[in-house]
Figure (cartoon, rainbow, N blue to C red):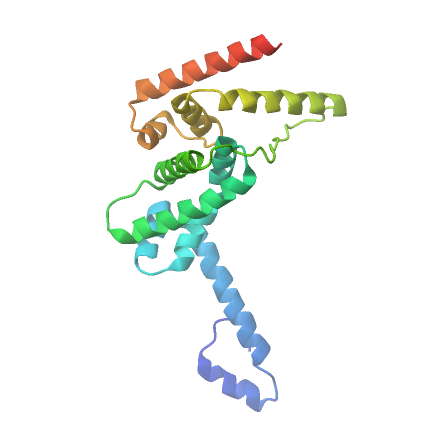
Length: 218
């Protein structure tokens, strides 16, 4: 008998032949679970949300896995603390799960999750008087830069992140959503309850302020 999703009754002939079906059954079960997990990853956001509403926790986990890394990066740069970002992200997914099950309204998952992440991050900043600067992860650039060049790039990015924190909250949110979240102008507008022209204006002002801050420190 090959390893696969065989009917339960097929175990009896194998046992009579002296073979053990335990390993086959475990392997088949594992194979089936991996197959379902792969199929869930191929589902659209809407499909995963629909399955979650039907009681599939695996579907919600697939949705959370799809956005976890990007949302963590957004929260981390917003809060300047990986530890705080991870705590907030747990709140984000808990709130999202409850909201998905609360009703059947249509949800545009990407901007919706970023909106929850932004609001939870703002709530966290209001609760905490001083935000710790635990670490600032630096994204490696492609290419073979020398050690000196890499160090200079890291220092430049550290300075940029510090300047971002000095921006007004609306400008900072828009810039982080655009640069670290990869959201479109329309999606940022949905997250922040703003029109597309307003979003573009925020981004222009944010980039101008960053350029001026960089020149002042040069």
